[in-house]
Image (cartoon, rainbow over all chains, first blue to last red; front, top):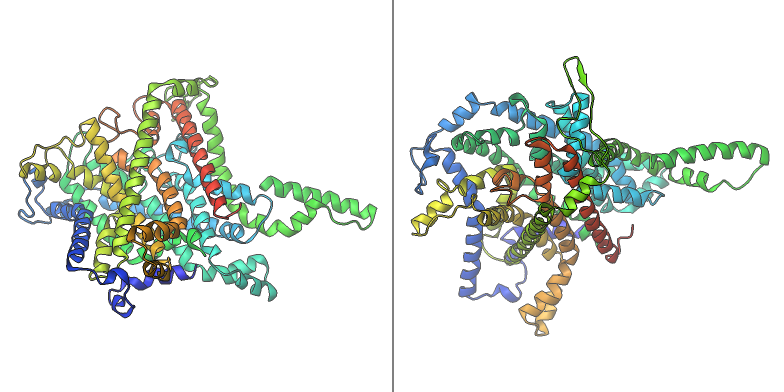
Amino acid sequence: MAAVPTASATPARPAGAHARPPYGRFRRSPLASAALHLTLIAASLAAVFPVVWLILTSIKPRNAWQSTTVELFSDPTLDNYVQVLTETSFLRWLANSLLVSALTTVIAVIIAASTGYAVSRFRFPGFRSIMWMLLVTQMFPVAILIVPIYNLMAGLGLINRLPGLVIAYLTSAVPFCAWMMKGYFDSVPVSIDEAGRLDGLTPFGTFWRLILPLSKPGLAVAAFYAFITAWAEVAYATAFMTGDDKYTLAVGLAQFVGQHKAEWGLLTASAVLIAVPAAVVFLLVQRHLVTGLTAGATKS
Amino acid sequence: MTTDLADGAAAAVTRDRGRATAGSRPPGRLRRALSTHWYAWAMCAPVVIVTAVLVGYPLLRGVYLSLTDATEANMGRTIGMNVIPASYEFVGLRNYADILTSAEFASRLGWTVVWTVVCVACHFGLGLGLAMLLNRPMRLRAFYRVMLVLPWAVPSFVSAFIWRYLLNGDYGVVNAMLRAAGLPGIAWLDDPFWAKVSVIVVNVWLGVPFMMLALLGGLQAIPRELHEAAEVDGATPWQRFRHITLPGLRPVSSTVILLGTIWTFNQFPVIFLVTRGGPGGSTEILVTYAYRLAFEGIRDYAGSAAWGMVILALLVVLAAVYRRALHRQGEVW
């Protein structure tokens, strides 16, 4: 397992290509080289174009989205941004989204960590049922639980309140975090546990003092996934949150382009405000994300 | 799990009492289990309790609701000081019978399967192709990698909105480009067939980067020597791909294909935000259909709960297949 992060870390530096002894395809013909780069450029354009167009639209005047011709620039202006920040509840929605996602993440990680360790290290009666439960519950689509949870929340008076949404998100975040952390704990050598036990630590002491500090990267990946899952959730938020001041971003943005009005200028500006910081953070940490998710599969 | 623990504790207590009279006997099975496993059980307790309360109880209630005729009208509610009691009735398996015999179910299931298979196949095929291109030494590789990962970095609901604008029939840039090239515009989101194509395109755009990165990690874990040895032995590129690359990728690819299948099957935001299931329900998958039943028009809670249970049954079958696949890989549980 330890080989995988290093393996995926080295080749990203183009300079490394020269240091390594070349083999096979490295001596490719100019024609093959051109084809390779053209394919990648085409794919990159397809990947980037929607985002670029979003940014370009957001700095056009308010009604320029209704233009039927392709124009890269027309009278660049920040009007849409000013309007989103001053005349809509965008900042309120942002705060709601951050609060709900952060609460979900923190609670889920705290609840799930010890279980992840237990199912990684111990074989005990009930182990199979717990693994089965973790696997099935994180596969649950929204449609299964949303009706009963909605009715229960309505009974408790938690509809249109943020704690209700956090509770709904925990149903998937807790099993998901436990599953991810099991994968990471599996990659921590058991010899560390054994050394701790020899030195007189209890199983819980081993987990708390030795394994948990070593597993911060794994915890971070699980937390990050839990966060962005809650951040981008649409179904529960749309059904539960009915007041403008309680919307999360996903629900709020939909109001800009609802049945009766289409304010694509406002929508694109707020989309940029959300997507650009998110994309920057994401690109900084993405290298760890894939390894975290497939950790169980690539261990050797 | 928790009942196991309680039973164990109770048994241990009786055993202790028994021991006082019967002298020293080897400790009983339950007591031995308790003393060896209580750490594991205690560490699992938080998740088990939370899952039982937040998933187990609603699930049972969902099963019960699915056997009734509950709708918005007879659900019962509290308005101010007045409590209106619930007046829905138990109707047995009628909701299930209605669903399984309806044409709606057959067509929703058919489209959901098509949607899942086409999306995952495109994710995997394009992801593998790009990963293999990126796995070669060349200039600008880090740059291409960042560009290609970008769709994954944008929150999915934002991407759904972007695409809804790009594909807009009158003002969308896609049609503007088609018209500029002298072609007629296409009613991307207003024609049943093209709406299906559109949601698949959007989901493929969203999902390829994850597959590409996961498979790239898998490719880099394949020892270079294998390819070199095969090349020395005269294997063609196709043979090397078929007999070294694909088998070497199997652990990663089986995981990401399963994850991708579940994610796509459950993909709510793309359908809900891009087409809202339309036009005329033609892009509605099982999950969005059940949601719409419960939260639009006259809210049919019982019907939606029954749809949810049918979806759950389908997913349990999928999980069983996955577990069998894990067994083959030697992960035994």
